[in-house]
Image (cartoon, rainbow, N blue to C red):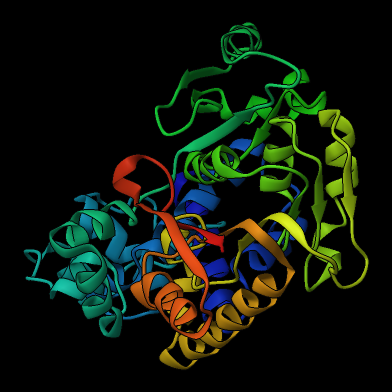
Length: 386
C-alpha cells in the first residue's frame, strides 16, 4: 500500500471509531475486508489510527475538526509533513479542497493547554492536583506510544539468559530499572509472538510498573495470596513466579479464561475461583477497576470516553472492593490496593476514606509511579490489619 492508501484506511477506521465502534473492533473489520494489506501495511495503519486517537484534541484543532479526514490533516500538519498522493484515484483519499490546502499551508496556531497536552479539559485540575509540576511532562509523554515490556519468569530463566535468547531470535531487549524482572524491547517487537521464550513461558508481556507493583507486594506478603481482581492474571503469574501459592478471583470470571493456559506455559499452579472468595487470607492484592489514566497511551480512546459520572461510579466500586477485601484479610494480614490510575480521587483519597471507616488498619507504605518512571502510571498502598 502507498502512504496515501494507508492514510485513507486510517480515515475509514477513525470514522468508524467516531461513530461509536471501539478502535480495535474497527481495525479488525477493516483488516478482514482488506486482505490485500500486508503485515507492514496493517502495522502502519494501526500506528496512524492510534496516533490520531492519542492526539485527538491537538489533531482536531490543527485539522479543522474531528472527522477521520481532519485528524489525518491535523497529524500531518503537526509533523510538518506534506500529504502526497491524495488524488482520489485508486485507494487514495480525495484531493484536498481549496480550504484544506490553505489550512495545510497556514502557520500553526497557538493551542490551549488541554489541546497541546491532548487531555480532556475537565481532567486538567485533577492531574495538577495529583502530579503538581510533573503534570505537563506526564501528559505530554502519554501522547506517544508506550514502550513494550516483558516480565522474565524467574522460575524458569534469569534475565540475562532471556536477553541472550531473545537476541539470538532477532529481538533486542534491555533490563529496565523499574523491576528486577523487567525487560524493555527496543527492536524486533513483531518477532515476539513467534518466539520460543514467549510460547514456552520464560517471558510474559507485562508493563514494567505493573511488575514493580507485584514485587513491592511480594516483599511484604507471606502465606497464600488472594488476587482479588485478577483480570487476565498478569500479577497472579508474577506472584506465582516468586514462589507464592496464588488463588485468582474476579467479579467477571470470564476475564480469567486464559489464565490456566498461561499458568501452564509458565509452569505455575494457580487456583482460579469460579465463585466468590471466602475465608481469611494472610495476603490479598486488589488491583481495582479504575480510569486507567496511567495507561491511556496503551488504550487512548478511554480518556475521551471518561466522564465525571464514570469517575464517581468507579470510586463507589473501589470503596466496595476495599470493604470486601478487609473482611477477607486475616488479623495481621496485608492488603495491597493498586490502580493504574494517576488520580488522587482513585488512590490516596480512597485509601484515606477506607482508613477512616475501618479502624485497626495501618499504612505500611504508598507508592506512586508515573510514565516519567518509564512504565505506566500506577499506585500501590500496602495496608496491614491490626
